[in-house]
Amino acid sequence: MFLNLCRQKNVFSCAANFSRGKKCIFCGSFKTKRTARGYVRCRKKTCGKQKSLKQLKRELDVLKGFYQGFSVLHRQIQELQFLETLG
Image (tube, rainbow, N blue to C red; front, side):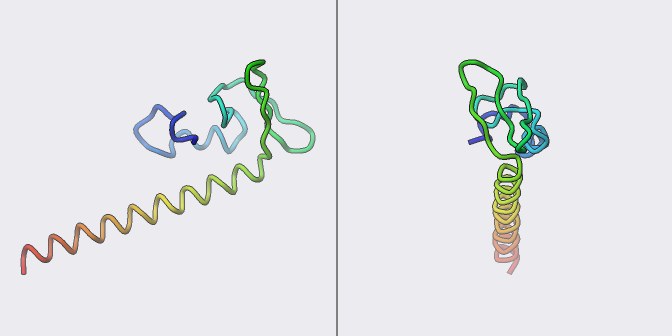
């Protein structure tokens, strides 16, 4: 979901803003505040949603792991195809 909110070439270059609680995961706004319970709440009146910062960091780590695993798998497939063309 947050991949649609990133407008940069690198997929996880804006994940730092989410993990620090600087950007809303739901609407992409930079108007956020941290609550005393460790949640990040959007200050926009149209959004107003909140999410646990600890849970958000864990979800981002899982997404990064899947993405990096897919990258490694894709690279290995390309290397195998290249070796097949040589042999």
